Length: 218
Image 1: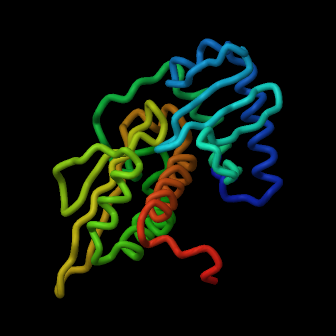
Image 2: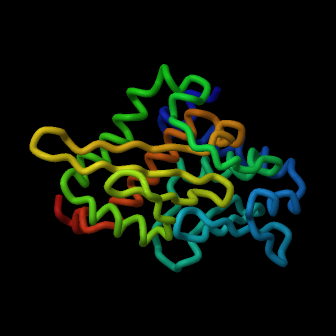
């Protein structure tokens, strides 16, 4: 497992990006369509849906950018996740069976860190406001599910769905949440990457909701 790739500093990110780009270039360009990417007329150009946005991937310049024209950069850890997914998902398909982070290799050992990074962020942010979470999911193009007070499925990558489940608390029981992955996700990317992916989803949900802090609020 690559447990140092996403939790290290800049050197770790740089090393992971270097390995990721090299691995990507070892694959045939046509193989990436199997992971859900669109291959451009220029053989060095790919497009991949990442949650609610389309990411442009240029193998020649080793750059990624969002197609929506926003000036926001694709973060280093999201670039790493994208590279890992494109290589790992080519010959995999989701089964439709959703499981906890604990079910993946090393997941039980690192579950507390995962929970702090993801589930606790959701409950701490949305607490008693399930409607804001529901609307955030809708903005990401999520599919509504029937569990809990609010639940939905987001396609983080085309072949890697993630379920978000939220139960609104009351005076006696606090609000709670869970995040589930397709059981094949651990065959596409490492367990550590799944933690980073869920963290990225939580950040995107918050940014897509009324809970995001205005620019300059701090």
